Length: 231
Image (cartoon, rainbow, N blue to C red; front, side):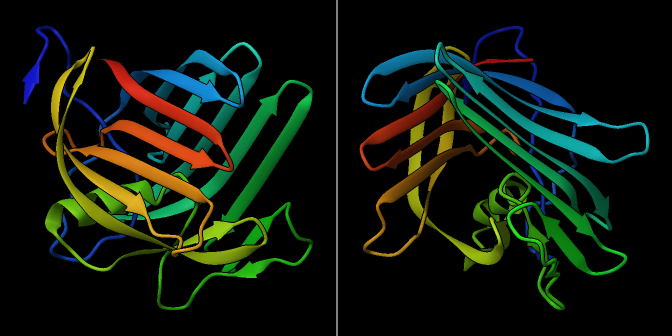
């Protein structure tokens, strides 16, 4: 991997993993991205992805992206239990023009319940399979992909239900960015042959938990972030 001088090597995201996975330790980081919102009209913007450790030892992973008429803010507050990620609170907010969408999910590991504002009835945490939110499951995804583990499957709270997120490895690619050149592993969300939405993530092979590029296409709308700077 070739990098520009002076850039720090730090990065992350969170989850449970098998014994053979790459359990790289979490470290605080901040990465900056160039963002593209194509909602029928292409709009350039900026995004940040950061990991912070709280005073109580828990962590928060956050993605914030915005352009002139659009904004996305998504975060996961989680803790580590014997290197296993346990999400505690997930928040999501999206604004496009005057339209706003929010979501909040609370994980209560003592009672075994998940409370989400998508339904009045709490969900039950799976007995033998870890559960995650849409942000925190990226950590085991990186660990498992780098270790060559299969299948890449994770139980994720999606709205008012638990859904199995499946991924497949497309292959290795080298990406050139303003932050340097990175050897990456491209993974794609497997939603089935008739899915209208496509999500692709380029994971840095030599920088733990670093997302170099993320791309999502749905019904003609395109959203993309690409790494521009590391702190």
